[in-house]
Length: 412
Image 1 (cartoon, one colour):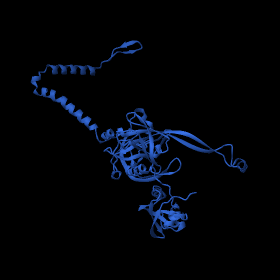
Image 2 (image 1 turned 90 degrees about the vertical axis):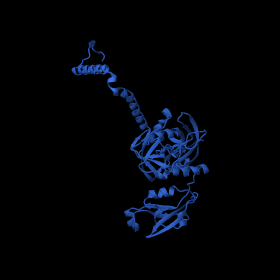
Image 3 (image 1 turned 45 degrees about the vertical axis):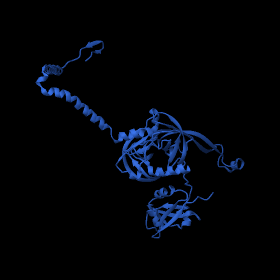
Image 4 (image 1 turned 180 degrees about the vertical axis):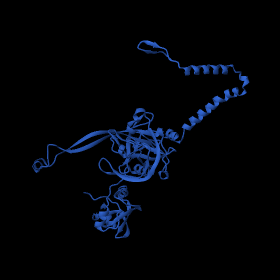
């Protein structure tokens, strides 16, 4: 105990009676232990030899217990995870403030005047290497429209990347960097994912990868699977998220494009969407509800992108439909409130040529139940031009099947 000064006066430390007794017994015990002849106690030498080894084994067991399936997966996967920085040029069209919706101005100045403003937007995301020669997977909403893409590896090196192909609807982009002998991740069979098994998410939340060139790792379980929904992009066009894998591993803004792996370190999905109530100027934070695109779906998209560089989703059905509620069912004399009601059909459209009629209730597409408009959007918008879809409809209580071939829309 040292000296404590208070206003220039030196105070001696206070020693209590309890402390004096403790010191006394410590001295007595020490003297007795030192005076005792080791030969008088045969076990003392044995204990002296065994105790250190016991402690060593305990420490080894404790250390070994820290290395588990999760830490092994992190060790294997981290070198193949990358940070992605993108620059995107956007255009904004707006009307000149000096002209109005006035026939006088339109007559002399040729109608409402518009101007176009171009500006750059920078963003961050995640990705992961899937081949030793530099193919990288990420999301379309991360890099699909980028004019410049820089990929940062875990060793801190940076590479310019090019877009091999992108699919806006599936939200998958395939990138390529000029490099060789890279570490890469093994792709699993996402159909075998089990609800409740461990899941590990890697990524670049809020750009943290830039601080030390290391991915952020979060752990959770598979909360659900087979979750399908649509979500509009910034241009209002629908992305289709089909059979998504839900996890409670923390996924935040910037995690998009990173891998979701199982305890074996195999990729089961691409981290893509979160539900969040935590919003800030830097993005959204995790509340434990995140979704990954199943890797089997990604494989099919990648095969097509590597082959053709694009996926042709420019088609139409010619259908005008509406959801069915009780009021709609009563008005049209429909005996059900599930399914989607066909209101109108464009002439000579794919639906018209297939034989679908106004008043039909669409109940299934390719055998998948259609209960809501969202079900129909997922089934139709995820198709490609030329694909044939089997529509099952309820026509006055009689179930009928119609094969609709999705063709190019007529030129405007």
